[in-house]
Length: 315
Ligand SMILES: Cc1ncc(C[n+]2csc(CCOP(=O)(O)OP(=O)(O)O)c2C)c(N)n1
Image (cartoon, rainbow, N blue to C red):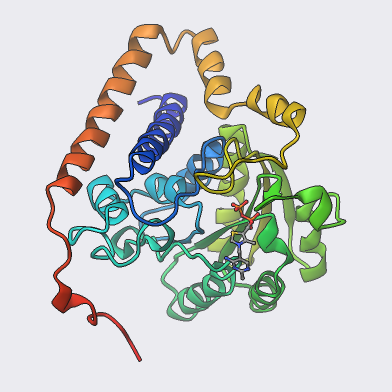
């Protein structure tokens, strides 16, 4: 498949998945919370295009796109959202703690910024074992104000670890605009404080993200140390499903919706003669069939047995 069509298909798959998850959540079928990544698909797809299966990834409460792009099995993922025994965490994690070691997804995390020092930890193990793996930590603009961000990146810089610190600047930390929670113009500027490269990229342009990620991965694999990438994007929906978003500036929102990464690549592909209505329809049908199949699998799976409640707890 042409690389751009492949990017488009993967972004569409994340968008359709998120829309389905929203409709299931609104029907009361999924327990817990949902934090949608609609609008941010180009970051997940662009970054993961530069990774291999063996590479490690840490994500956040807004991580569905990242783990899908990294290759996580959709059936086990949906089962986890349903808290079923066939879920990737046997139903104990839910949306905010989803993981799948077999594809390098070492976990989503509800603790803001917590994946950053963990990424330095796995990257240190890779450096010591010389296993050639790169670790990516995704986090938001809000997380870039935590102590974990400064401590985790500083250590990776000092030890020259194979890490990509990927900040998705989606303009909000819960209900607080980025303009009100930090004074730096660009989060990528913070890289200077650690003595590592800081790259700012258009997070609505999947190819730009893919290029920035690929260069940083080469650097990391060559033993040249970490990179901080700030991908400029926008959270199209609320912080969580149910958020009334009363704090949002509607003009700003409308401006960003015009930059929808999926619409942008659609236009580009149509102009290049690579996409037409029929292909679009076929791709959506194929993706929706995969999603429906995963939902059926989850719905028909057993709940975890109460006897398992204390299993996999390490004290
Ligand atoms: C250490 C910690 N502090 C506060 C919270 C509450 N909280 C949950 S999500 C969130 C906002 C995170 O914003 P950002 O890092 O920009 O990620 P985004 O939600 O925009 O993807 C906050 C403050 C938390 N979960 N963990």
